[in-house]
Image (cartoon, rainbow, N blue to C red; front, side, top):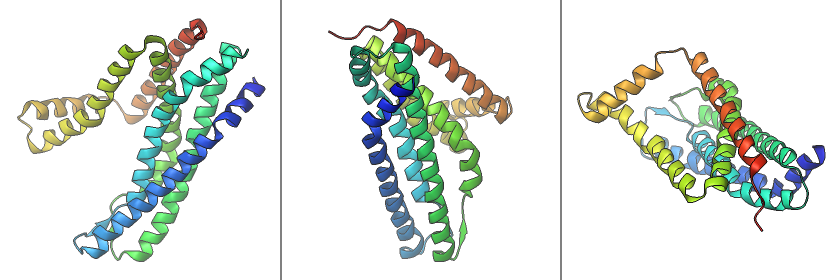
Length: 238
């Protein structure tokens, strides 16, 4: 098992390094954009940690997409050369989780730097105090996204284009549809989108946040169990 984990890090460490460099690049872009909005235009009454937000968004997307891009090739190579499916599955997930947690640490450092610069540069209040949220939500999101990314990769490997396009539709509905529904619930509550948004808010508020997090984690574990069963039966391409 340890050898399989070491092999994952040796194969994929460059991808992890590029991911962190991309996070830093997006953070610098976000800081520059916030400076233009807050100082150059003189139209802002408060400042927002734009660099941290963009770096976190990029890290989340890369956790999902990067896992999908690397999983199939790694499976074919490693299992094809004698690694057991059980060891491959565990080592690949542990590497994905470790990489996601390292990204969270980088995100913490970015926020600390951006907050330190922002409190000295801007003579205004910050809109969101992100660090308390990042401290507890970051590790949970790393755990969850690594599960989701692994499950998506396994489904695409097993079911091909059908799984890919199904996941793509779900992604677009979640990324575009849900924010639009929530916005309509405030601006146009009587519209169809507004009613859908109010329904989502009512559903989300039915249980405390801690219960929802536990439910989401349980669903993630269930999906990983299904993924494990699929991988155990997956054949290496000739």
